[in-house]
Amino acid sequence: MRGVGMGELELPPHWKVVKLGELCKIVRGASPRPKSDPRYYGGTIPRLMIADVTRDGSYTTPKIDFLTEEGAKLSRPMKKGDLILSISGTVGLPCFLAVDACIHDGFIGLNNISEILNKEYLYFQLLFWREKFNIIAPMGSIFKNLTTDIVKQFPIYLPPLSEQKTIAHTLRTIQKAKETRQRELELERERKAALMQYLFTHGTRNEQRKQTNIGKIPETWEVVTVDKVCEFLQYGTSKLCDSDTSGIPVLRIPNVIGGKINIFDLKFTKPEKKEFEKLSLEAGDLLFVRTNGRKEYIGRCAVFCGKPPHAMFASYLIRVRLKVNILLPEFFQFYTMTHRGKSYLSGRASNAADGKFNINTQTIKAVLVPIPSIDEQHEIIGTLQACDRKIQALEKELTLIDELFHAMLEQLMTGKISTQPLTEIYV
Image (cartoon, rainbow, N blue to C red):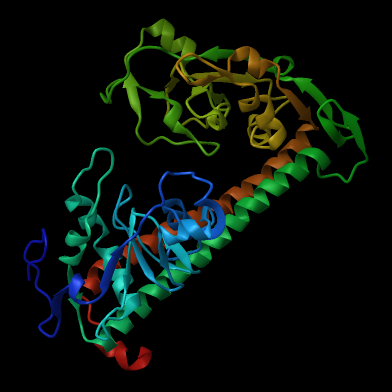
């Protein structure tokens, strides 16, 4: 079988290939002009935006943009349950409307769907074709755009209706499992954030609290600036880096992610012996991001745990080596992720002429840190690392479910896996 921009594909003999335009009515969205006109915008009628779709997934509730009644008349009203497809910028992303809403001209709506086509199956078929939509969409002046004519000509692989329902049920089951794990992951991240806020203000010993210049903390804790508890702070190398693995690995901004050192996408350099001795990392060193185009990324940090061995760090990072008999690096790293810790770092970043935000060694030296005993620091670290392990396990499970979903989507939408034995069960 050959479709729009497709190569040869062997489908099951009882399947058909029908153009999408022959199976449903395709309508393009519309936008009131001029944009932001109060006659049309700022009302109570929701208008779908691509950010709504990427946030909610298959069943989307628009929450970002709203039209007045006059604005809705100049847009394209759609009904709850209608199937929508993005056709501009982010191309080929389908969703169902969870409420009545309008769509702008970056979307098309699909309604009056033929009785021989299951709507859920069509959703997954469109999801299957998303990459192909992105390839064939012509480039406009700014964004890629799909025309309604291209979409109408797109081939839909059509097994019997009962088989469509079984395929949709199978894929939806996997998708629901993913959504469940995603909710668990979000809750665990929220739990960790709340736990951090509590532990850094209440501790683990049920102590009375005292008022300090960073707020209330347990009575036995102290508050000091980083310069009192660090051996030294240091900027990294400005030496040119490349992919030649015969050199020394250099950690850069992309390697400091989510409070951890990520050793993917490493770059390398060949320093002089003196520079290597000066800038080689030791386990327990903290690396801070000192410059970024996004203010909220400034001051994010991670503890170097010895991997990769013999590593250096780049000039856009700052190395902090603490006096570990007073302040443990893992404790300080977790503190930088609290609201209070962030306020001393990204909250005090300066705006440079190039549009980037910056901190320096003086910014870090001035950070006020609450310090409990080493034993209590270990307790707090252990509690939060347990949260991290659960988060990592959920992230790994989500990745595996996502891989399963895409593998099954490919196999089911091309008939390589037959669902006929399941049809009597689910239909």
